[in-house]
Length: 163
Figure (tube, rainbow, N blue to C red):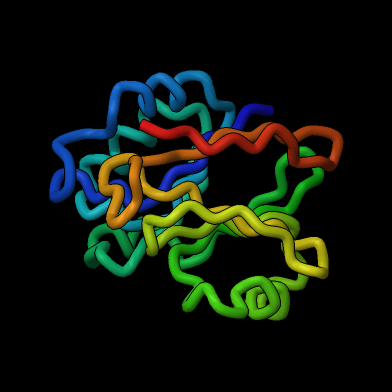
């Protein structure tokens, strides 16, 4: 199963639309995981129409209309792997241990907020992934997103893509 991980799209405030490469990935993905900060409900509407399956949450820049349609935390099991999608995880210092305590029943935590890509594994085995932002690189050299595969209870082929 092919996954697309995105966050912090901030459309239309940071960009008019998501980059064409990201829309191409949406078409190829079996599941799109979006970790919040949509900003405008129009992007949610479009992604719901174009994605085969969408698992998503709201972020701190998302208003009442988005919060009414999306959870603060989205949990899903895909091919035997338990995912949690949320926006904020706090400071990077101590993040792995803190998130392992907060999400003991999660295998993979997908998060956003910082616009800074992150890929680590806590001592408990919790994998933490932040795909960055495909539209707002905020102090980073590139805008980014991630792809991955999941099957038979295993997450594999996690790739950070630079735009």
